[in-house]
Amino acid sequence: MLTHTEAMQRVTAMQAQLKAKEVDGALFIFPIDVYYFSGTRQNSTLWIPANGEPLLMVRKSLSRAMVESVLTDIRPFPSSKEFTSLFGDNVQKIGFTFDVAPVQQLNYYTKLLPGCEFVDISSANREVRSVKSAFELEQLRVSGVCLSSVFKQVPQFLKAGMRELDLAAEFEHRLRIAGNEGYVRMRAFNQELFMGLAVSAGAATHGFFDGAVTGCGLSTASPQGASTLLINRDEPVLLDYTGVFNGYITDMTRIFVIGTLDPELQRAFDLSLEIQKHLQSSLKPGAICEELFLQAVEIADKEGFGAYFMGMPGEQARFVGHGVGLELDEFPVLAQGFKVPLQSGQTIAIEPKFVFPGKGVIGIENTFAVSNTGGEKITDIDDGIVFL
Image (cartoon, rainbow, N blue to C red; front, top):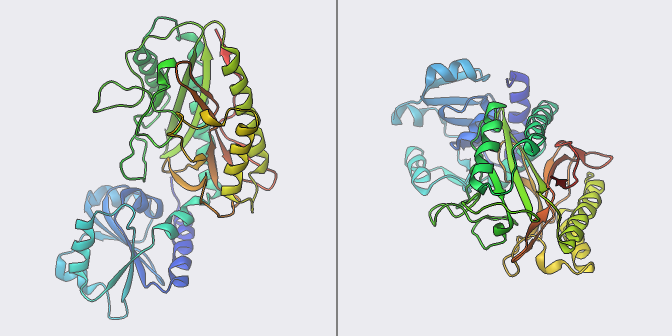
């Protein structure tokens, strides 16, 4: 459970950002942001002034928020008149998360606080949340252990002739029994994910998901993940799943093969391990995210696999790693255009993958924590292909 000390450290970090940007305070309405600072996900609005104590205003459930939140000032959400009176004349500029707040909500709060200027603090908020405390790192380690424990069970139930859907159902069943919360939070608009992917050679297809692998899915309304395709011998089976425990997400991928593997796919897998090793050793404070991505691309190109790196040819994802925490797509991103240095305590899922049309998908993914000695592997089980 979040402690008051931990919460106030987060609040203080946010207040430093507000002061630097000359913003008088921030209103948070997005549930996971409210949770991060308050310890409760109840339907609430959180006010963090640039100076002073935060105020949590709860719509529902107040009684549960009073039990869960570690903040001191927790109240029912006030009437419009009462809400306006909470903000003195000295509050002129208010931070708001434009990346996730609907325009309707922005208009609502703008009417409640006439004369105030609302400014975007999305990046500042994500930067604060990207650096994990010792408490958060421990939550992620627990998540990694639990997720890894289910991956270890796959040889017990993976069989040739079963549908991708049957494999997914068995894996997800065991993951839920282990305590996985299931709901994979994502910040990016128009992205969604149901726990993870269990896909075979047919996964080498186009798709909307902003990642290397999408899968066929079950319909045009759900064109992602496992399908009714049968799993055959001598083809790669990719399981890419998230573990969500106490809200914290770890992400990992492993490859399974019933029989033997095409030599070209084996070479690509060995290359994915080489890229991962290079990036893991580089996950140190000060390393520039874009440069790490470009180095990964260079390694893939040098070996002649650049056309298949990180997605279907022509529709490749332009990243090789993404931040994880309470959301699957946190900062930092090892991506083209993300020219910022890494910081100690950030957690990143590194996922060098290759997609070969007609043959299948191959690669690796693990969650790492940035440290002075390189990436600490949080999803710590063997990376090798499991041959059955």
